[in-house]
Length: 263
Ligand code: LHQ
Image (tube, rainbow, N blue to C red; front, side, top):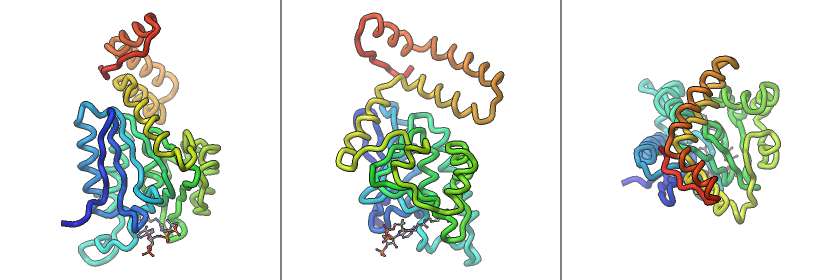
C-alpha cells in the first residue's frame, strides 16, 4: 500500500487536513487529490464537524503541483494540464469555495503555485511568521491556476495581483497581512496552538448562521447593491428564525456564553 498523502484528524468540532508529503514540501499529486476528496466528504457529512482546517506537515504548507509526477501526461504521452485541472484542481477549488462549513487555511510554511490558490479559496487564511505565499507559476512559464486569477484581484486589487503574478515574488507573512490576504500572523512557536484556538472558536459558533454569512459574502461578488440588500433580507429571515438566534439572545440577556447547536 502506498503512503498516505494527507493526515486527517478530528477533535472539538474541528477537522484538520494536513497535506503530508513533507519530503517534497507536500507537493500535490493525483493520490493526494483523491485523499482530499474523501476527507472533504468525511468532514462535510459529519454533523459534529463545524470547522475545517487545511495545513501542511513539516516545514511547508505545500509547493503546489508535484512537478515530477508522471501522470501529468495525457493518454497520448503529451503533457495535458487541462485534464488535470478539469479532473482535480477545478472541482477542489469550487468545492472549497462553496464548502458548507467554515474553512481555515493555516499556512505553516511556503504556499506555492496551485497550493497558494487553494488557500485563497478558503474562508480565512492565517500564517506562521516564517511562511510565505508565492504565485510561482510564471517562473516555470505557467499561468496561475486553481482560481488564483479570480481570487487574488478580488482580495488585493487587480494591479497588485498582476504584479504578484508577473514577478512570481515570494510574499512574506507580514506583507500578506498588510495586503489583506491573511487575517492573522502568529509567531512560529505558537502557530499550531493559535490555529487550534481559532478553529475551536469558529466551531463553537452559530454554524448555521456562519453558513448564511458565507453565502451572502460569496454572492456579493456577482450582485449589485439592490440584489445584495434583497439577499441580506432573505438570509436574515432565516437567521432570525433559527434556534441559535433564540439561544444567542437568551445568553445575552442571561449574561452567559451561548451554546449554539448549528440550527
Ligand atoms: C518538489 C516541489 C514540487 C515536486 C519542491 N514538485 N517536488 C501545474 C500543473 C498542472 C496542474 C495544476 O497546476 C499547476 C500549477 C502548479 O502548482 S505548478 C507548481 C508550482 N510550484 C513550483 O513551481 C514550486 C517548485 N518548488 C520550488 O520552487 C521550491 O522547492 C520552493 C520555493 C517551494 C521551496 O524551496 P526550498 O525551501 O529551497 O526547498 P527545495 O527546493 O530544496 O525543496 C525540497 C524538496 O522538495 C526538493 O527535493 P530534493 O529531493 O531535492 O530534496 C524539491 O525538489 C522538492 N519539491 N517543490 N512542486
